[in-house]
Length: 282
Length: 309
Image (tube, rainbow over all chains, first blue to last red; front, side, top):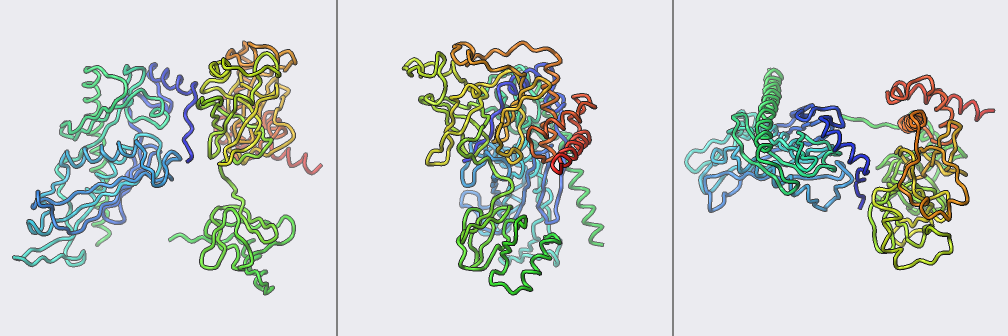
């Protein structure tokens, strides 16, 4: 019911002109990402990522289900995104906005299609019992670039999560509690990182990690999903102003660099948390 | 674990009421100036005789607050007035709004309320005199009056069934805003008063919109000829301005923003005192929080002094 206030004509002109001159409203360079803060735990599989003022949390849980007939040896990976009204007055309770659909689909493409998590390792008894992993992402604060933040949060949560250890002897399946046996980490092949670009001035300029104000004023956007091995998993450009092929290539290389930096941050955060858990146990 | 407890004064009051052995357990409708502040989820009363008003709901035979605010009671009706909420208009309010879209014979105006307000074509002054009849061509050239993105000052004329406000600019003092800059503060900081059109001695006009939008502009004296001037009423041209005039406008804007940030009430005397206090600093420095705190504390000291005299 309550709509977001649109930026005024002056603000629009200011943002566009500033980008043309190489400046951004918050003082960043065209290619700099906001400061990232990652908080993991205390529960296993819970991560909260702050990208500037944008805040997204992700939570991973698992249960045992019957696999689908088409893939009897594959586990199930389910993604759920929630845009709660506490994030922004533009989000209404029970009403799915277009942005929510976009972010939710991109997250699926980035994490499921890119095969970040090994689903075959989630099989317990072929055709009967497999692990179903559920990733719930919830947006807490919206200050621009929800997709990148949500992807980071989901990946951190997946890396942080531990599923219970299972012993299969013939047809007998025993699920061990955390006290009996240490829970096992999910097998993650690679860490795909989303890097979003906002296009201004009819596609002439691209900036990385747009703010909310920049998103409201931009002419179009592009998202690259790259991992640390410089493999492009997904490229999304849904509408918006046309961009020349040179610029796409340039953005791809920038995205690769940013992805490497972000992957380092994620790995560091996960490693530090693991070390803390070790020392806490002793 | 978080623990939420009442502030000491309220606790003492509660203890006092319990000791009296009243029938109303928690409702303390004491003397003037004794306001009861509640937070969401706090029980207001368990007495079934009270009816619930805005900001309350019943939960297990008790009346519970759903917003943070002050408890108000009118006979048997208990309601909670929220401390901070979206702008709720009243008839006669002076508001500053931004045109968001054009509709059939009306404009939609954003006034930072729950809904956009409506400015009907029949509620504006058409150039060429008040008595001019509306024609088809007026409707076709609505954008020549107000276009999307324009700022207007208007008065709340009435409300629609669904709660949306209807605005009017039938007075020469209302209409399109020019020659200045907008400052956005929270609507709770601007109380309704006699005059919302302030003229400061430094040559700056301030329009205090009750909805929280404040327009600071160069002083342009209003003459009766302007009403009939077809070009002037809805022109999009700003007056020529000198560097110092711009700086004064910027200074007043920053002063109002500082008052807004420090949760101060914004009215003429507050702005005047704060402006005088700000003259010690450069305009840019007024954006720093410590400087803002200094100016506002100086201004509030002067206000308190003036109030006690």
